[in-house]
Amino acid sequence: MVVEFDPTQKTKTNLRSHYPDKFLDKTIPDTVPRFCFPEEELTFDGYDENREKIVEEFSFILTVMDGSRRFGFCRRYRSRKGDVKPFCNVIISNWSSFSLFQQVMDVIDLLPSEEVIVSFLKLLLSKPFPAKEETVAVELNVNNEKSNTFRFTRSSNPYEFLDYVSYEPLFKTCSVKTIMLLFSALLSESHVIGIGKTLPHISACMNALTSLIYPFNWQHVFIPILPKQLIEFVEAPMPFLIGMLSDAGPLLEEREIEEGTLILNFDNDTFIKAPAVIEETLPSTLATSLKRNLTRLKTSEIRGQAFNQLVAHIFLRFWVDIFVNYRTCFGTPQGEHNFDVQKFIKSRPKQMLSFLQKFERTQMFFMFIEEQEQLSAASKL
Image 1 (cartoon, rainbow, N blue to C red):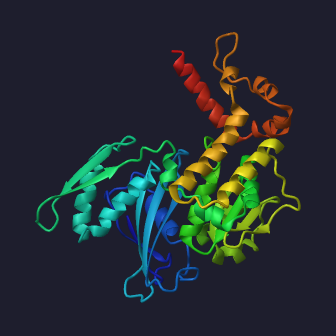
Image 2 (cartoon, rainbow, N blue to C red; image 1 turned 90 degrees about the horizontal axis):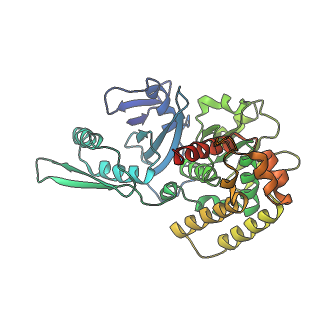
Image 3 (tube, one colour; image 1 turned 120 degrees about the vertical axis):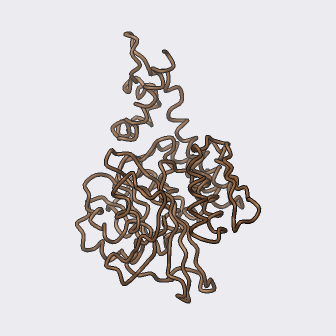
């Protein structure tokens, strides 16, 4: 899809073109444009003054009627001169393989016309979605010249989300203490709002936050970038994780937000709104170890993909220490594959008791265990 920003339009956006011609979900044409341009007015506040042309990447998630999710990957183009109308190329998919989508966007940038782009997309979409490590090849004739072959490879990374999610923006602007408080809030399924000046920064921080809880998944409302037109979402009673641009901040003051909601400014690591006392509900020994390892990594010279891998490993280590041998709690004398929660909690050290008694009531725990029960049953067939 190609979405233009047009301030003369009431909605501020215009759906210029899309492929395929028909949408499987009829809400897409009305919904997607506002996520591509969540601002009511485009500014260059927060961007490098020496950059004449701004190309920015970010993502969003849509929840459709059946409860499933669609992932949006955006590459947006703007010019300070104003000689080109701002526009955004966006891919909507059932998959969150953003590194693969980056490769597709790179090719689209090279193609000379919309007609050629449509031909390319038609060929690409005729291929099955690749498995991990698999490469898809598309042969395309450009300008009636010799055919070009474009290859797209899906990541082999066991943590595929790390090919797009970067922890560096989050750790660069936030202290380890703040990150641990946010981690604790997510595990308590609280209300969390993060704000920032630029779309790429806020999108990166929000996506990094949700990936910290891996192998669990955030089961509630997750909107990396909330359009101003949907500001009422911040009054929702159910847990949510919402990102917003700073210029929407004043609108929050007009809303009745749930008591206990955390609102963090990612640009200066400041809580705008928080409970009088923000509790870290993590087991004390594990919290100390987590803080020590994250501080050591944050102050090191390690950067890039190695940094991302180590952050993921540190948080995964936290879960391994809690859930070690949890598989022994599957099954009953009657041969069922249910997970015995109380048996599991009693098997863990006392210092984990308070945390686990709260965590086992969360939706993320319930869904994780349900998936493991299904796997346990399937392995016995």
